[in-house]
Length: 268
Ligand SMILES: O=C(O)CCC(=O)C(=O)O
Image (cartoon, rainbow, N blue to C red):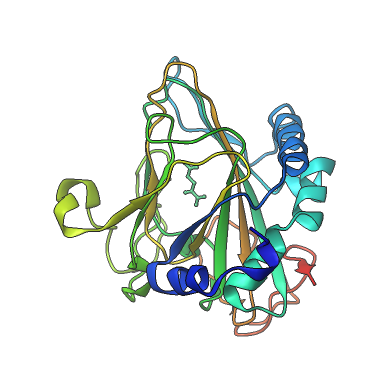
């Protein structure tokens, strides 16, 4: 697929369902670069890195903002088709990079990723927010592929953020629309989307999309991925007191544009 010209069906699906699977959008050299960046980042953890798994029960390791200190991730973010994919989906004339999020689940990791939306973790309001989840390893139900509540970005709800690998509510969270519904206890009430992925594919999902991921119950299949958070034209600065992201950005005004060193414009 040529990522600069996503089909009208894909765009329609993105708008209606809130999540799409894009096949073969990153050629092997991009995946090789991403893998090298992933390993470099893993060996140079930032202050924001953490592991949600209990000792001896695998690893659900995450880190953020590697484009600032890992050359390969910087190059992937700036030069790969990722930003163009975001622009094509959101019909955006500008793409800002909000975060790059490293996500590793080792074999034997019992932690699922708990149901949550991404946007409440950030100090933004607006609709043009896409996450691209880009696997380095094949991903399936056994080793922890992602899951989505179809159409949940259109429910008009923002649920309490949780610590994604533990399920605990973020204590400081403001008054949202309660906790996320217990989708797994009521599977007949929801249409849950999930895809098996190969390196080169990626998932694109809306910032208000309710999503989760399986544990890694495989014996020997790592699940490494990079999630890029990208925003488009209508996103404005909207501080939330609890958001675990940078709020001391004096140049940003409530309701104003977000482009700054922290959230660089990466496309065009
Ligand atoms: O990789 C995972 O298990 C979860 C990823 C996720 O929730 C996200 O990218 O927003």
